[in-house]
Image (cartoon, rainbow, N blue to C red; front, top):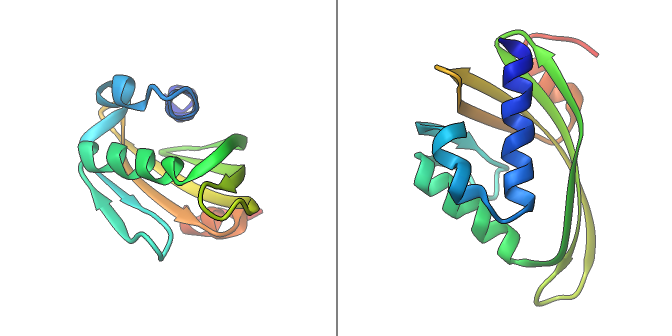
Length: 130
């Protein structure tokens, strides 16, 4: 089951990068998903709100490139370490963003995402160590 969860996270980001998130969201995201984003964005509730939040976020940038650097099978969870290189649409500033997330599942869908600044924080939140 865990490898299937890793694949769901991979599919989520592939759809996100390809601008197809809304198309696959129903198959990947639970209707009642909670996405605990960075402090600046807070908690986003529900599939449609999460899709809108992610699409709005990427729309603020030009030259958006993001990779899942590492997806770790953590039993009931998946830990993802991610890196993004973006250029601000209005500022033109180039920014590299690194973050990690814990993805939790129910009935083969992502039901909870918790974002963290570092992989170590995500691992700790999932009860694991580096």
